[in-house]
Image (cartoon, rainbow over the protein chains, first blue to last red):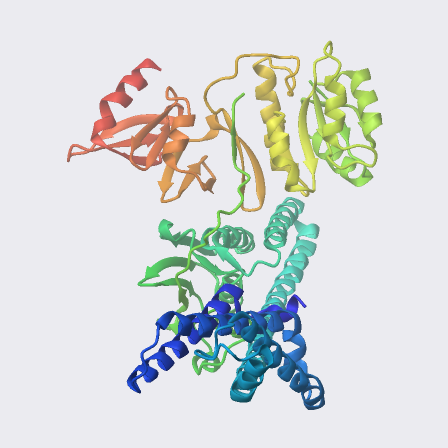
Length: 375
Length: 250
């Protein structure tokens, strides 16, 4: 029952519903009173408003009760049920309503004090039963209409939820493709270092643990702050810097006002990894890797620059490796057309990879472990 | 010699510690244990100055061990270096005044730094942490801090801070070879630090006077604080007389 009551229009609130019904009654009363005056009859206004108002008050209440207790059933009822149950119900309710009305307003019709209850009732049934049934069926149609509206809304919402789920699943899948690749390469490096330089292997193992801790901590969260991402990337750079000691100069710069801006987690690491694999690793000395975060109007721009080999002809034609394609897909899933990834060759040695995405800031404070203490 | 006990329920974890500590001359390992109850017994028996303590052990955790040990007011508690794979307990460890918190796997360098902190603490003649027994007046200023930086837990003594730079909602804490970004405002940090050691020299900089070499006057009337490490921190005019007075006092 409860779940059926989602997306109920505001006018089905009992107070609003019954009040609107009474308002309709008053409008009818007003109309009748005006038209009678027009025909030359002079009558006291209150009896019109009382009788019409009462009639629609009763109808409003009846219809609302009908909605409250039979609404869900009415929405689902089939033709047979409508003919065998709702039709007799409509007659019974209309009759009942009229019996109540005639009972309450003893002096109606006006100027016929000699008529008995049954005479007056038969007169009213004769004149208004069909009108009354019309009111009933209007309410019936309204309930059915609300039913269709609810169904439509539920379908829409289910569809939207499904889309979000799908996007999350895709994002998770993309993220998983990024991690293991890096993970196993690093383990291989450690395995190699174990034979030649135990200290370096130890250091790299510690750094890898720190990286894993950071990425596990992020868990399922898709967006992280720039500072967290840079924290992660600096650790990654430290590892690469060790591997390429003496061959590369690294720098990370970012406008401090952007530290709390959000970006998809692990979005930079594949770009930096690419810079190493395709650029820096292929040169002998004096390579540069620079990361710069800046503000570009309402957008966050992060540029990864590396010197090295330049782009291969294939890459120049816009073909991208799986790493960059993943990043593009993730940007698109998160921001649609409002984000971009660009790869450009500055000259034959320098390559720029730039991502631009809408500037957003986290609304919630991240939990911090920082504590200050006295001795 | 720093008499030490190793407590970890894993053989290989103890082996690593033993091997690395063997290379540190002033550490003497007086015993090893694999369970919490063994640890309590061993510490009561040998009264070490230092314990390397795992947090998760089969019977009790490391904090329970310390609590049991602290019920005996006649014996000083050993200093504690936690060695654990879990970063969740860092704040708790910091609050009971542990010396350091090593996350597994750790490097020899990291271990040596932790032992150095023990030496410093022993030199000041303080006994172990967890002060039910000691009821000193606490110092009003921060002397140590814990934070996370690049996946590492750091217990930092403020003496190691050379200078602090404000960066919007963050501060960068520079300790020489490293720097760490914390989500803190420079103003709140300034209030917590001892004004006799830490001086705000600029809207966005605090320096540790113990690391200051000199104040250099620039031709345009401004000044630069030069640290012993050679780093230069810009200084606002208004702070110059203050720093010169403080430097003379030292």
